[in-house]
Length: 139
Image (cartoon, rainbow, N blue to C red):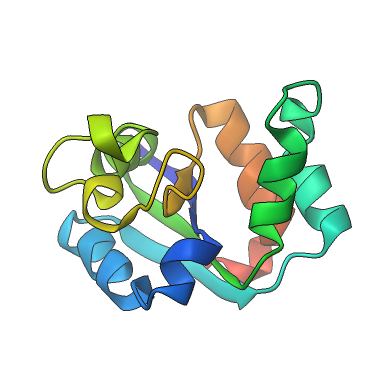
């Protein structure tokens, strides 16, 4: 069954010029890009997107990082897109990520880990809708 998931290329990867390489890897993994935007998150947008982590000790640092530069958000479609994109991303800690994964190739650290992806269908629906309206997605 086809599904849609959210991808964010984070400020560290955009700043380091990895956007094209990451998008190419996504497409090579047979995930279809059905929505794509580059934007600079405001503090309010970053706080809203990461509100689920508000009580965690890393929340404020995460918000600061996510507003530190532009991000590229995309909606990806494909069979088991959420699971497949998470596998392509690799472990959150790039030191523990498998060879060839996006985080192993492009992340700087546990915090500056290059990419974000939705972790479940419910999360994906909320996250995709945070950045894209239905008319923004081209299937």
